[in-house]
Amino acid sequence: MKNAFYAQSGGVTAVINASACAVIETARKYPDKISKVLAGENGIIGALTENLIDTSLESAADITALNHTPSGAFGSCRYKMKSLESNRREYERLIDVFKAHDIGYFFYNGGGDSADTCLKISQLSESMGFPIQAIHIPKTVDNDLPVTDNCPGFGSVAKYIAVSTLEASLDVASMAASSTKIFVLEVMGRHAGWIAAAGGLVDSTIPIVILFPEIEFNEKAFLAKVDKNVKDYGYCTIVVSEGTKWPNGKFLAEQETRDDFGHAQLGGAAPVVANIVKKSLGYKFHWAVADYLQRSARHLASNEDVKQAYALGKAAVEMAIEGKNAIMPAIIRTSNNPYEWEIGYGELKDIANVEKMMPENYISKDGFSITNECREYLLPLIEGENYPPYNNGLPEYVVLKKSKVNKKLPPFKI
Image (cartoon, rainbow, N blue to C red; front, side, top):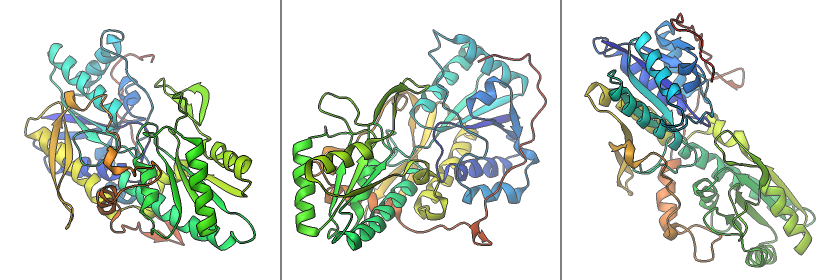
């Protein structure tokens, strides 16, 4: 009987803790297979530095409360492990930690980079004679993982953006006659426009212009579309993805800096777009950046998203117990109307480092809105409400004790 390791990676979501809840609750149902679930403090960094949290010391009530608590309860990280060839010492350190703490199951809850790490650990553990069953649990607000129909975290972000777009549009509409005529909302999405697409779910009588990463920014066509909307409706709401690019491939929001993954640091597409409108058309504007608000809004989570996040965490443990390795449990859509889905899985070799973009038939021909096919795909994902409990007017979220296990190895510098 082995212990399991669980860790959260990358940008957190409103429902990633629902997957954590499922992993721990499901593991506790199989005490003859899994002794304890040890969680990495701050993701994979917790494994490298041997900062492991003993989840067996958390009460059943607190673990259950994770299901309605946003963000990453154990701490996440943006730490990309390099290739086996260039930094084998880190992978060997992981195996040493797993050996020291009798860990035979590895559950990594994250996006594409996490899938890659999971695959490499599975491969290396075999070669080092200490097999680890490595299971990737999908999570990303960007909704860009292949194989799975959609990614936990996305449905709730999409719901937040759709609601925010609707409410802000009603606000600007009420002011447009004598004041603001343009509202710009910047949303996440470096390469894929799934989140921006959610802004198109509002009623068709509301004038929305969407700027997708998949469509290069055509300033002339954009201004013409915005101007027509203002003339026809009196106002216009613009939803711009942070990953929108100029025709030369440069991000509108690029800041000439890079994050720890080597990605261009983004932030500021909304003011760029707003100022283009002001300079060319003269319309008064307001802009906002949804930023962390969109991915942490558990109070407005999609019920479908919460259910799927839990189901995938549960499936990960069950698949590991069945002996599966180097796989990712996935959502398989079986029907649009009524919306139905089941759990399947994909091989990590087909998932790691692969991004799923918006299909061409999901974006309108003019490049500024979504199609009916996209609407049919998105609407079920934002369906239903799943409110957290409230106390004194505020959501009641859990903070875990996070007791550490004793270290057994020398310190490791990352």
